[in-house]
Length: 260
Image 1 (tube, rainbow, N blue to C red):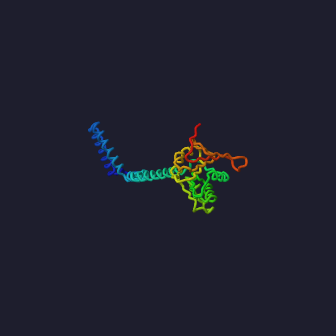
Image 2: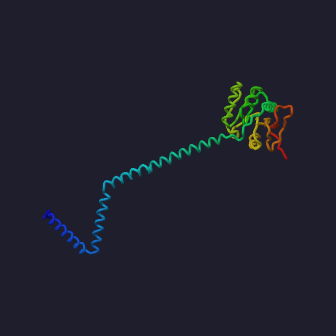
Image 3: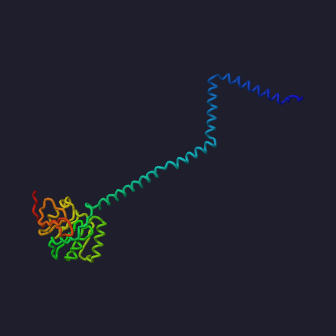
């Protein structure tokens, strides 16, 4: 049988006495003191936890994540400026495209009708002809080749202008024919002796004030459509013997007003 260790007994007795004294002191400080002591202990523990290495790592990770996910104000401003620039370029592109939109869909005048229009125009050797809405350039090219006169074709559609210039080149009349990409309502054709049209009635009417200012004796010839308020000097309707179907109207400046 082993005997108890005297040192351990003394140590156990000392620890017991310390616990008894601590409990007596804890009772003496009262309820308010105990509450204050517990709050102080909790504050110390919270401070230790907040300053722990693990907590510092979490803060650094959170800060890094925020800097990635939320761009700074300079980046936001730059991005907004880039977007506004793109929107402006797109708007300008739309405006330019709209400015080149033709007022009518291109339908070529039948070549036999072109011949008849020029015949009715009573062309003279020193005449200058304007074709407003020239399309592929067949009227101005025919006028130059057949009558040897100077002619100007006006069209706003870049595709038609390209076709017309190609036709002029192929027929070797570049010295007589000029093709311009312009809005026919903005171009100056006050020096015209002959004006040919294949436009809609509304456009003919809109052009009437400028056409009326041409020199006396100037001729206006329109395929298929009249000019409201202006009495034509001559009207030709195709017959069964013609290779085309339609009507050609001719006015000589100054024309008579039409009353209906």
